[in-house]
Amino acid sequence: MRAFIVLGHKVPLTPNFSLNDLPGSAGRLDILCRCVTAAFCLSHGIRRDVTVYLVLQNKIVLRFEGASLRHLNPDERSTAALIQKALKAFTERTGTESESTPGIFIASGGLPQVLKRVRDEGLRIYWLHEEGAPMRQAELQPDAAFVLSDHLEFLPEEAAILDGLPRLSLGPLSLHADHCIVLAHNELDLRFGLRPPQG
Amino acid sequence: MRAFIVLGHKVPLTPNFSLNDLPGSAGRLDILCRCVTAAFCLSHGIRRDVTVYLVLQNKIVLRFEGASLRHLNPDERSTAALIQKALKAFTERTGTESESTPGIFIASGGLPQVLKRVRDEGLRIYWLHEEGAPMRQAELQPDAAFVLSDHLEFLPEEAAILDGLPRLSLGPLSLHADHCIVLAHNELDLRFGLRPPQG
Figure (tube, each protein chain N blue to C red):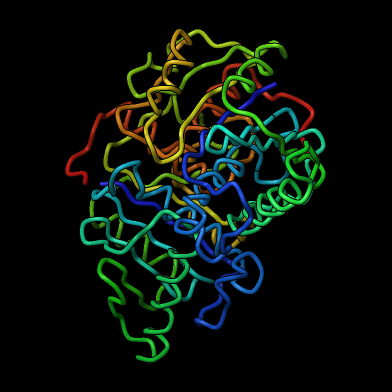
């Protein structure tokens, strides 16, 4: 199992945004959509052994479960539409947990709850950080979770929660979050081989 | 210098498509947009030492020059709008070469012309191919160009043109073209370090 935990600092908590303006009115939702694509989409299929957590403003958690995920396409707009649908369901049901479309769950929560859940599932958690140890030389567990931020730096309160986790870096340049996911996947693919089931 | 040559098999040759439907009416233009983002966009800046060639149906070549590129944002829709603008300029000027926005050039042409240009500029050309040699163990030139396809396999006539180029693979799974660009960049970043100028 692999998991990616992405912190969205500006994405709205309601579905009131335009799919035509993901970088603006949707608070850089385009980044989170590309993260979902990078985490799940292969050239011909979906990585079924992956979970993605989008943590919105440390208040709402969108969980994508590869094992049951449906209707996911690689483009940003259709992924944003799935997220908008989840936020709509969450608003209408006044904040109770729900599965808005197959494999997409939305509930109240924040980074501490997600970390606890991932840890309870037996995954080793790594903090992707520009000052971390080079991933290629680092010890890695095949069952791994990675914490990333959107276009903004980790907030001091987030860094305080993550403090103590092993920090890994990917290269000499500061990269987009979705590009970091691609690199982490590839490192695990090369090190541990194909992880069935795929398709 | 680095270059990425991406073959688009279904993207229309005219600007008559909707920005709301990049995977459909625009012939999977979403893939090519993500390739442009992966090639140029860093977390805080643009890779200036990169050129991207989008080869549309082997008839039109869109060339993005990092050194002079402006108005590029990471999201798919805004990149598609720049491409649409280029196709509009090309149509109106009945096929003469033009710079539609700073750093984006459009002209008639196909894969053979692009390969000649890249070779004349002194870049070593690699064919990203699932059956290639593993990139991490391969000899690589810092001035490198990579040929990729969109969601479709290379056509027999394309494979015939590319035959003889060194083939490189990136891992055990079949990946999206933009994810391949991320991995190729990272390999060169790690091997040859930061390539100024950035910003």
